[in-house]
Picture (cartoon, rainbow, N blue to C red):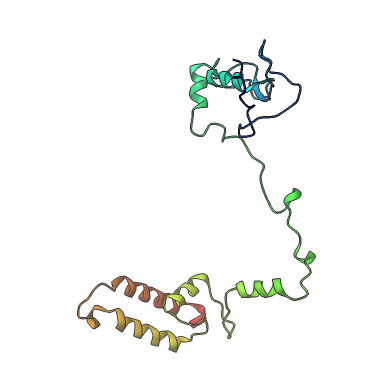
Length: 200
């Protein structure tokens, strides 16, 4: 399997190539450089790193053409290795924010003289009511559904509900029932807010 005369040596476009001047192909009688690593024989070498030899491009191609991962395996072992999730059952290291090298820095370790981090944090927090009454996540969703501000009171709530019912009700739209879903959402949002502590 000698190379053709005048043919340039394989270049870096070959994946896995490792040049080592003076290292020859391990195939007996071959005088080409051994630049490609291959196991000593086809098949698996267990769960440990295997023993390797260095081959030239022609001999590593011949080895790859004859390689069979399943050589020496029983039918049951082959079936087990071909399962879609084979190898994924191994336990992995748990990642958490409290131990090891993954622990994040403490908030007190940050220097924020221009209040850039603090300002962004405040901007990211949901707006609170001026009267201090609490708003739950569902309260905020209902307010968005009715397009109401965070500080809306019971009067504003009733007014907006009346506007939207007139807008979506089939009796106000010549019997058109295409807005029924929107009407149901408006009614549900109103019923929720009417009983919420912020509108008591």
